[in-house]
Image 1 (cartoon, one colour):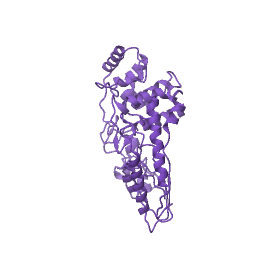
Image 2 (cartoon, rainbow, N blue to C red; image 1 turned 90 degrees about the horizontal axis):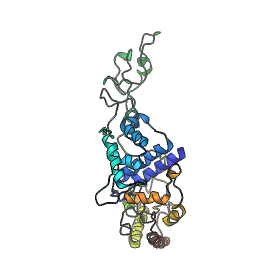
Image 3 (tube, helix red, strand yellow; image 1 turned 135 degrees about the horizontal axis):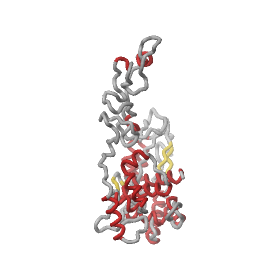
Length: 378
């Protein structure tokens, strides 16, 4: 059960992060929001587990529970929640079969009209912050998971980081759990334990992960291709004289021939463009890497093999309740125009064959690079 949940979390990230040259792919009918809602609501229905119930029950719970009671599909519920839409002139994207379009629309309207929706700003709001000091007792949204937990939500003078008042003999003003008097000395516990400590809070105002340790640089960007990597590579830090050699893994996998655009063939990089971009990228590395470094390049993946192996298999999401094949999931993502690869993750045999042919051309391009010599790396 946990494995199924994790696999779908990874799929959600794959849906939400298809970036081409730093720009999100234009989608329809709610796009990533719609797909994410349908997936999550479907998981709740299938696994009968509501994670983080304090938020889900207050913010989304009533409409979801009512929808389940009426046996409405996640498609209907997510349309009622307005994560999914039916854009004019576009295909109507559904993951679950509907008895009729008229019944579908009526169910959405009924569900939406019966439940008023709260208008919280999910990026800054905390549902429970009665004293409005921006510290809450609930962990979700921008609550205690982000700003630490408020130990008294009825007084704005009491919150993490507040200065102590009269040694916090009676009240724990800074929410560090230390207050009261040591009866043996007559001094407050705050004075005895913390007087010699320089108090300083910490705030994070960035968007970097700290998983990398010491001499390791991960400058990968989801959706990077041979063109965008030229700018991304400039964030690599190495000193030609004072640093030791470096092993660089240059691996783009397939974004030069694989993209999520409806006109996927028109947005492929040509062999000439790819060759020029890779050559420029490798030449740049030769100017910043210390002598004795190594650069490992990998070839493009063959998505056609992946599709042929998976298309008729039951997807993880479809193993409980209504069954869904990988083909059904890929078709749904393509309808929303958020597929990570419209050329390979498609039932169109001709299109997949063209994609594979372009991949072979790109492999020939990579083979031409093997005969070049570089000054500072092999």
